[in-house]
Length: 403
Image (cartoon, rainbow, N blue to C red; front, side, top):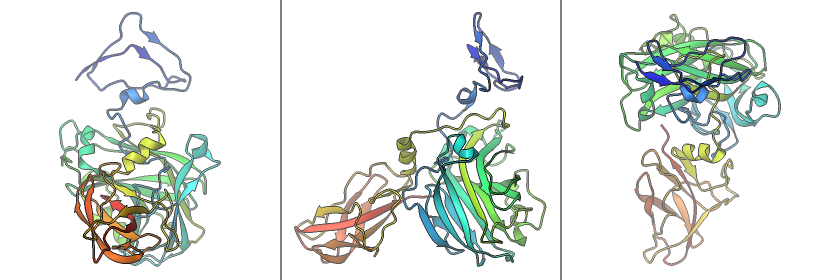
C-alpha cells in the first residue's frame, strides 16, 4: 500500500468512476485542492501509468525503414518486412499469399483519432482449406528488461491491457495472444470485428500471472500475437484465457480465416500496451511520440544506409557509403552507429547500386567483403578480398538486431 498525494482531480464527464491507486491506498487531498471538470477527459492518463514511455514500439505505424510495401509474402516469409517492429510470422503449408503495406490514412475513425498510418495486409491468393498446422500472426516482441512494471511471477503481479484500432474485411472472432517466451507460458483473448471494412477501437484485458518472472536482459520476454488465421490444431481445445503452460491446441480457438478470400484485408494502428486493467472509459491516452523519438527507438533493432522506406533495387544506389580503402585494400566503416543497438547486429553489405549481399564495390569491381569486429555500437572495419589500395569503396549496409 502507498500514500498518494492528489493536488487536482479531473473527473470523467457523465459520472464514470476512475480509480486512483489500488485498494488500501491512502489518498491525501490537501486543503484548497481543486476538482476540475474537464468534460470528456479523465485527466489521470499519464499520471496513472507506471511507465514513462510507451512499452510497445511504433504503435502508430509511422516508422517503416525497410520498405513501404512488400508483395508475395507466404509461409516461407517469416521476418520483418515493412512497418518497424512488426513481424510477419507464418507456419505450416498454407497456399495463401499476401502483400504487407505501410498504409497512409486520410479518413475513418482511426484517422479522426490522430493516426495517419496503419499496418495493412492484403490477401492476394486465398486459401479456404487450411491445414491443421497452418497459422499466420502479426507480432511484436519485447525485451525482458522492459517488462518489470508487470511484476510478473510475483505476488504483486499486474494485469495487462492491450488497446488498438483494427479494420478487417471479414467479420467475426479474432484472437490476440500474449506469450511469455522466458517461461513458455501463454494466455489468449478474443476481440470481434463487428462491421466489415470499418475502423473499430478494441480494449482487451489479460489476467495477471504470479508464475514465471520475465527476469532481465535484452532477449525476448513477451510476444504479442495477432492471429490472422489458424488451422484446426490451434483450435482443438477451449481457448486458454488464464495464464498456463503454452499449449498449441488452446491458442486460437474461434479464429476466423482471414485468408479465405482475395477480398480480405486486415489493418492495425494505435497499438498500446498498458500495465493494469482498463476499459474504454478509463484507458490512458495513446502516447504520441515525436517521429524522431519513435524512429530512434526502432533503430535499436534495425538501421540501414538508404532512404527511409525505400527497398534497395539493383538499379539504385540510394545513400551509398563512399570511403577510401586502406593500403591493404580493406576499408573503414562509418562509425559509431547513429543509435546503439540491442545487441551485436547482423551486418549486410551490398555493392553500391546492387542487391548482391556480402560484397562491396572496390575501385569499380564488386569484391567479397565482411564486417569485422562488430559490436552493438559499431564496426571496426571491413575486410575486403583483393581490395584495391587507396581507392574508393562504395557500399550500402543494413544492421539488424531484431528479437
